[in-house]
Image (cartoon, rainbow, N blue to C red; front, side):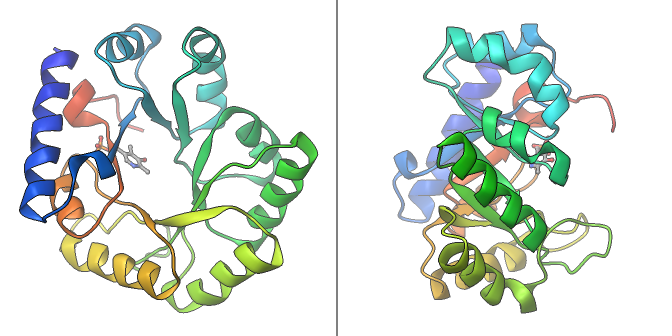
Length: 221
Ligand SMILES: *Cc1c(COP(=O)(O)O)cnc(C)c1O
């Protein structure tokens, strides 16, 4: 089941890439395994998935350390909003962080990477829909924040990430994020989920985060 879904998603990624004149190899599929138990994660690993995404540090800590020991070629991506008191654990566990979204977290990430002697590529999350309840730096504050993270704190900023509002035309948000990244000289774009990853690829996504299409529906938050 997961293997069939994976083949289907890969084929859709490839077609979307070709439509956009891009190479499918330039797009990383992140399997979002939040709320999926160890058995389903192992099924995905057996099917060949090597990039996984988790939202919560605590859930990831319960699930991943043993799996990572057995599969050292896996890249684990942290996707969820970070609390300051979870940053040390996040830096320890996640290879890449997609939810850098405010100065306090930026400072904590810089401090922890230094303390642990690691560099974790970070995506700066932009709240492109300016939704009050959603994580992410506001678009107007993004250029200064990006500069602060890169030049002030020397963080390894890889690119930008967004989660468009549910009802929105996602393409507009993806285009905005791509344009902002280009202006800032950032190469990577973490955008696109089950509902819109093909659109995201056509707008330049380098990392798509797909849960439901791969694993099926998960329990609600
Ligand atoms: C849950 C989640 C996803 C995956 O969503 P699906 O619609 O199930 O593909 C992607 N990104 C983030 C940040 C998420 O929280």
